[in-house]
Image (tube, rainbow, N blue to C red):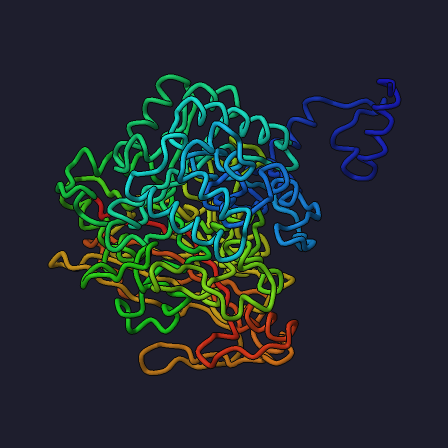
Length: 638
């Protein structure tokens, strides 16, 4: 142990020079009064004393493994343990026998296997005698072991019967599910390593109300096994109505003292139910419903493998970037949509409608932040275009996925090439722990990407000025002058000032340069009608906006036949301060940032080059990766 005398000597050497005369006495000892005076002044280190997050934590909260019935029926053999090892950076063997590894480990992961029949289908695959007494399960055992098209038929039948509430009784046994849940939390607990890798506990509640209408939610726990094991996870055998899930969440917190939140996902497959203004069973929403949804669902999955649901191009014809990885043929069973369904499926429409409902009920039920996940059913979370492993094992890399069907319900199909290599969630948390990550999700200080790992900062306030964009640490001024993504603007200091926003982005070192940053604004006009506008606020190069203020497309360097590109266009980073030029202090509004990369090869281009295959002309071969920062809301002063 270092002696006190030596410590003082080292301190004296450290303070050598003019400073030493200020804080030491003639005898060479520390003068406390002078030290106190010195350290009451602002410190030299610009980071000392700051407790805001300095880097985003990367991961996802929506991955299925062989413990999900539809996944194992479709050939998935990667279990939760292997899936978590993969997320931590290990190389594993996929269900099709191929070696796979992430380019960079994740910081966190949540295995979100279906709570319905959790783990039961592994017994069906093995042909366990007590399960084989059921003729349906016996038929499934045969199909699963046959593989290929027969296994795919089992997947379709499971989804269909689950949506009809007609699954075999052996799959709906509560005691069996609870036993499997405790085994799941044991696996997850083994992988949780605070400070290095966070393994979140959670599950997917899989409501397919009305037959394939996607009302799925992922339930995310803040706490560990000791809390999670006290209450059996809710299943759709209990109820398919979201408000019943919220009641379950309240009961869980009341009993355990723990905390949970729910994340609805890919409303683009809900056939108009995800953001409807009536409940799935046809009752008008009321004040209790509005408050309860706002309480339990602070986030929304804006992008995943089955499409991106930011906005539909038909609802925003002026938005040239809205047509991105769109799935709009129908619901999970590919049942066609009815006129008007699209209005209640996309995030931007919901954000606008939330302002309208807030005016009516006093609470905004759609005041959510953005996350992205894969929803992969392979046990492999993959979002990089050159490392994409599909939805089910049948869509893992191989020449067959060029013409394969990701979904096929009675001839209504979605092709494998329509799957997107999306998405990821960046969390601005102070530390890599369950509590810190969950708290960041709860306050919506998160952003979604379509797979790229770009850094994005987004702050709103009343006092940002152009020189703030010259800072190398935008967070210091961002937190000092405003609120981060997911927050609410403080009351306006006066009626003459418009809000200003500090937005910054830095490229993923393994992906494309940045094309532009946009700010998307939604508001209610003086008549209470929903409006929106997309502003280009900063961009790469010397392009000039047209008469409507739109910046021309940046072009492309993609060499499709070789699946390559060059970063000779675009910028490695972009930052600006932007002030709303159309601000009306009397009107409610929200703002979110959207960052667009330059075009790069899509996974289909990598497949074509690797397998030396030619894809049909309608198959997209390039992609413009992007990020979506959670919104910031403005409410007029009372």
